[in-house]
Figure 1: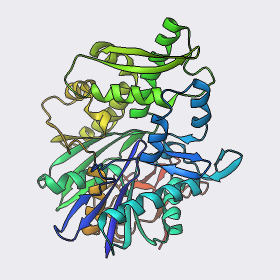
Figure 2: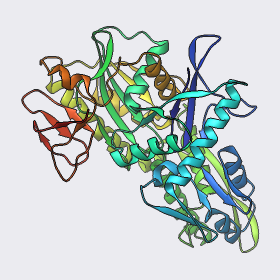
Figure 3: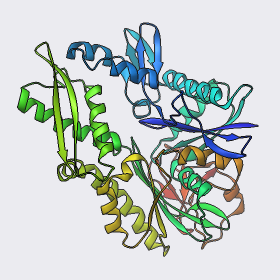
Length: 432
């Protein structure tokens, strides 16, 4: 049975598979240059949709075009499919309407086709595991499930991103029995923080995870973009967002600049290509590290605030944090490191490597070792739970107006907590 693990990201998506030759999970490589990260972007053209690297290359070609030409193309560009997804919504390109469900199907179908091409002739997918953020609604999870079903895949398993990250980390790192890891996942679209503890040989979430869907690496990019916009307006009397549309090419430069500050340098500069009054010119956007940290600090503070909530809950339960695991490109920023070190003195900080493939690898790992991780339920090892409830993941919220299946088990006296509506109680229902 062939399986794929898909990490559908806000900026990039990654896919993993179980290589039959090595018997180990490996990242799928897209294209001839060995890239493991596939851009989560789409562009509608007169010939239909293009996505991933091809869509990104279309934007690169616009760097020397006028602002009007750029805006014309960007009106048909989706810079982050994951962040716009909403059940029942649609997008209009060149007077043609497409539901978000249809766009999702197209994108997932593309990356699965690319993955099958990498895995070789005769590779047929029977099972898929996909990861989702802490704050993902049940409706969006169902959107993902439905999209895979429409593509012909019936055996689909959703997995929490923090759990998948810890599982992926455990493939190449030893996690000792009783070890508690704070997973700090600062990705392109969200910040997700969870405490994962190895108990009885299994990785378990033992306190409620927290997340913020309005705080991610892309939000840091926008902070840089607005700072640059103000500078250009002051120096050249030219508004890069005059038509109310973000210039995605310039935003890409801001993202590149952010990535450079993940290194050790003090000052970085990027050339911004502008066409002002019919003439092309380069505008140099230079930032010192101090200036960069000042600009991005609001979003970093939000992310650390989420971590503080989880740390407080962990300490309140008497657990120890033995390690911090950084996931996502923005988690490697120096300002993030400094604030985490101040929050958790003397706790070692580790990463899964530079390619951000831990979540995708973890998805495959869960499929290889079924029933070892109950990703939809928070447990308390100090209480005895009803065996029937522990075996069943379909616990329905006791709020009749909600009926979500995303309830987390808290301490025995509190019963359950619903992530969608906030309801707490013991009057839950079980879906068999």
